[in-house]
Length: 318
Length: 318
Image 1 (cartoon, rainbow over the protein chains, first blue to last red):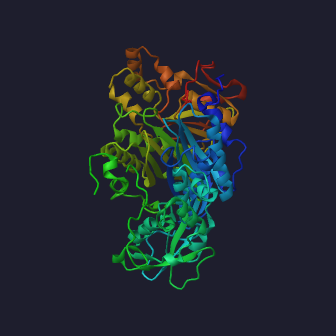
Image 2: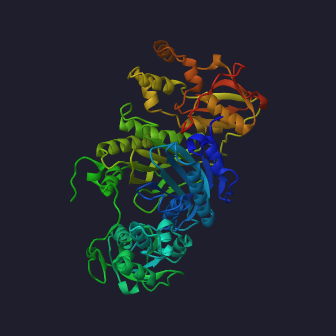
Image 3: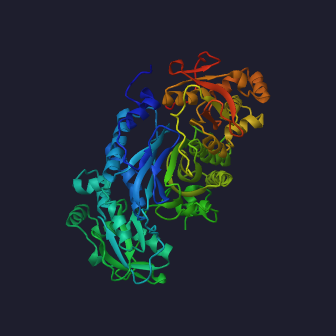
């Protein structure tokens, strides 16, 4: 028997895997869950949608800013929004998890608890994973989804004249990050938006069914991510600030911190809202708001017809 | 413009992603490759087989023992064997990659080159990924596969009286590790077996088509992995050493290092051979060799009818 000193080294890999998987409910799409060489997931469409995102402690999250449960929820959520942004329904995730031997076992079980909470919220299964040793906590999540007969909504389908629309809050996570960065813990609403997005995974399906021509998950920032659509579609995009929802809560926080709330809305990342383009005059799906128009290729991404300073967006290793 | 000093920080995330994905060939199963929110992979069976494994520098590989290309090949191979061990054909991988900002760009491009080499060898696509900053190199690979109408071959289907068979070399990677651990670089054949397995991915398909009742990828060591089958199937397993292939090369290395080559064959990990059980009197598929028999539950995993010391097998954080 090994000593159980409350660390993962004391608990041991196999007992820890048992602790984080045993007794969990799986949805019907999980045909074979964790415990074998590989999982088996139903993808009746015959096409599997797949994406992966890696979260590193100290880079993507801080356990003094977020609870382990919030980090776990977020690690799953940020991947599921990428599936939803293709117009697919998420079915499952696999989790690669690395941590130092002296990591408290409770951190791992709380992280995993957060993953299961978000999985249940989305109706998906955690179907497989790997737990290994490393110098810092690294969480690698791969999400799978099913298209249910829809065509995938790519970034490349926007056409001049299409309308640009968003679904979900923008700027809140950036405001929360600014608050946390100044050493504050409130207002809780913006801080929690940074700690853990609560995406509406159905928004992507509604957009696909509503004829979206291009779609993206707003993870880097609205202008940056619309820039990805503009580049992939070879179009320009103009945003009308009058149509953006700059919440009074963001204005309050901006005033308190001496920051421009519109900048958070335009360039803040991590909200995991959705942005999409739709044919002109289309009826937008429930929850979607028109904020701009697709323009000609040479104009790039503009705000009220003009270039907007630095687009923001996150690039690693810089 | 940023300085290009030969590190990933100088190259920048977006240019690096471009460098490691541009111009690569994808198989027909890749319906949508890297560059969008998610990839789309053909899985005509309607069931997706999925697995994930994380490799950490200093834990799973050392760049002074292996070339970056070998590490890249291995990172893909060890995942594909898990897919093949279910009786599925690998279709694709997604790669989560973390490294320090001062990592040489050439290390990343060589790692990726190795991944593409193994992908081409297996006929699969590298369909997506994520590149982030961390304190050490962490490679998280998720592999997907298609069952092609077969039932997944689980660990739990072995029945008393079944024969136990293996396909692929055993003990070579452990011998290579022993050689490297003593500071030697030869014999190259065993050292390269440790650096980069060359699995026969078709072996799993042949076993499934040949009626395998249970199957596993031998990654932890033969006895340890057969132990997983024994536990999952609630059976015992007895191995006959006379039927094991202890190559003369392993005997030579064992003599030189004062080690028992049979121990490498029985307990050495990382060979990524396959072990499976088949109904008694079945004709074994091409390349498969009978090495033992499935016994009653209470007997555990034995060698020539007796317990074999410590089973070996790798457990993390110990």
